[in-house]
Image (cartoon, rainbow over all chains, first blue to last red; front, side):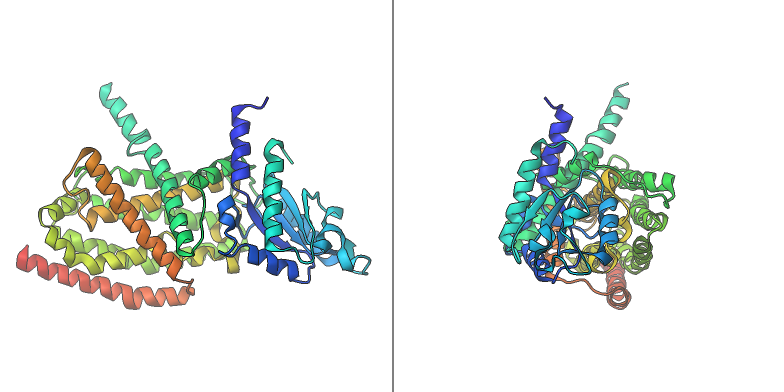
Length: 148
Length: 315
């Protein structure tokens, strides 16, 4: 049984996920779909989703693309700059497991090789609806989570 | 004892912190909802600003190693204190403010610059390049919009022949026709308000596409929640000031009716602000300064001269 304070905090967390978008070596396909998901047509503000520029404000880190060796340090740094509790969404086939770029000389693989990933959204690229569906599923999943 | 309790009620509940908190969050929601409807979408749910606030408060608050820690932590609260003190000097549901004296218009105008100075210092002490650029832009922009804003506020004071916000509101109730004289001044003030609250088209200090989060870049958790709240509260306070100075406050009504009139005027001003926000795109900093000094300031000066002439002829 959780205290009222924890319940209120969990409610607020699910009602207002602020996202930050990070390209870790993507072909830009997933990034265009992410930006498309933030347009008025899909209206993600209905779920309280707002994009923020700085990792200090954000709750959900959206990683697109296979992790290249160049971007690995930057990804870790961005992840460490986020305030807890924080969540990571791997968007697209490459971020989920390397995709077609798997085995390339400059590629480490999926995002979960570097940072803990809470949710995978497959597709090449995933449609904006898939991203919105993923974030809503993530929110319904974290209702009970104390500290991810 | 009873006086102390009354004063505590004024400070903590109405028109003090609790009212400002609720009104600020409501204004935030109304603004975002109007913005969404003007973009032909549904927009946030009614509790969205509250959820944002609670979430930020419950999050971890990071203090980077490089920052000047005491000031970094205390500045958001100074901004809130300055804004909440202003509401005591503005007449709300009736014609009398809690604190009313000759010259309170000037005091309010100066108190409302404290949040801006806090924003500058927040960026300065964050020791982040983005925040430093943001804080320089805050100051540059401050010198552009503050002059026309003050000149625009002078117009009604000249016509009413008083430096007290309550007296000005009282004068406009007695002579409603005089409100029409100040239309240009109100327009200038509404445009300068976009600069003061750092909203589109003058959101240059935290332009996300250029400098990440501007002065707020290093702020997280509780501290960011409170600085955001200070900005929402400032919106309410400035809108209340405009409604008292330009629009005659609560029209001489008092009690619940006066309160409703006051709230109506407040949200009319927020509506115009949201309209400007959804119609415009961000301008560059030097375009903003050129516009403020070449268009807004002369317009405010012309308004002032008209006010002086009207005062001399019909006073």
